[in-house]
Length: 74
Image 1 (cartoon, rainbow, N blue to C red):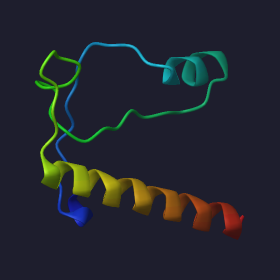
Image 2 (cartoon, one colour):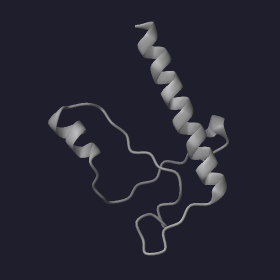
Image 3 (cartoon, helix red, strand yellow):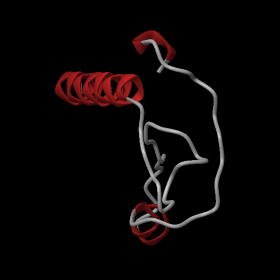
Image 4 (cartoon, rainbow, N blue to C red):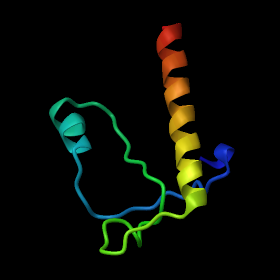
């Protein structure tokens, strides 16, 4: 994230998501990532700043490209 101009701070929050099925049932290492702030996530007034949105798009794009390059090389 830092390479894409974002904050690379790791934060935690309590919650649950569909990735739990992949991680637990199929024992696939997973991470949860989403742009925005934990304080605004899943609230009645949930929002994301436009710069966080653009950084998130860049992070997802880079992750996908690197994954595909790694898969192609193996």
